Structures are given as C-alpha cells and as structure tokens.
Amino acid sequence: MDDQVTVRLLLSAGAAVIGLAFLAYGAWARHGGSPGARRWMGNEFGNEPFNERMTVLGGPLFGLICLCFALGVLPVIGRYLMLVTFPLGALLLLVMLWTLVVFLPLPDLVYPRWARPLREENRRREKAMRQWLRQKR
Image (tube, rainbow, N blue to C red; front, top):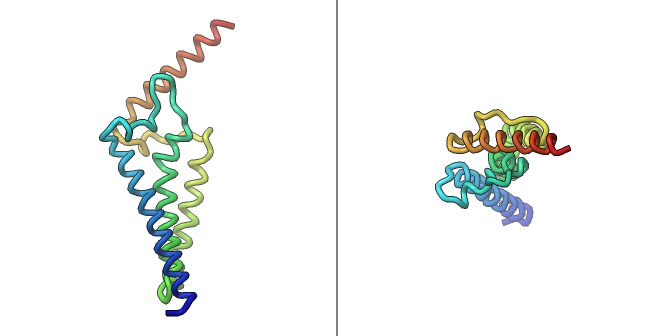
C-alpha cells in the first residue's frame, strides 16, 4: 500500500467514525427515551437555545458533513464521489451556519414531537418572566 492511500483511508475512516458518532447522538437525543436524552430541551429554569439548535440540527448536519468528507477522500473512487459529496457538503454547511445564528427561529417541524410542547412551555415561561421583570422596573 502506498503512503498516500493509507493516509486517505485513515482520514476517511476517522471522518466516518466521527460522523456516525454525531448521527448516533442526534438519534438518541431526538428519540428522548431517557431524562438524559431530554436534557437538551432545558428545565423549569429555562433552556439554552444553542444546545437546542445543535442537538436538533447542528450535530446531525455535522455528522453528514463528516460522511460527505469521508466519501470524498476515499482513494481511487473518491475523486468521482467528490463531484456529488462536496457540493452536498457545502449545502449542508450553509444550513449548519443558519443553525448557528441564534436569532433566526427554527421551525417547529425540526423538533421531535415530544419536544414541541416543552418548547412552547419554555417560551411561555420566558415571556411571563420578561413581563414580571418589566413590572418590577
């Protein structure tokens, strides 16, 4: 085996493992079967919008970007796969950058069914807290 081939195989394998790990975490958190899996939605003290965004879209998108990279750097067939995977990866990167912008709202469609009522409850509590703080001024 050539050194360049070995390096490309190792890069591809590493990116695939990282991508699959991010996708597995996203699936686990999205399923929400345990309290630990639901922790990213916050609690009665509020939530962190960045955690929500990264769990719902950021992590899975990063996993898909890693898989696109892994396919693109494969030896021999990677140069042909690059024609499809790199434009797809660039598109996924743009969506991920949109996810990072906290002031742009995410639609309810991207949240799992169990998280939508919690999200609405968190919004309601936050609105009530802001109203209470305005009255205290």
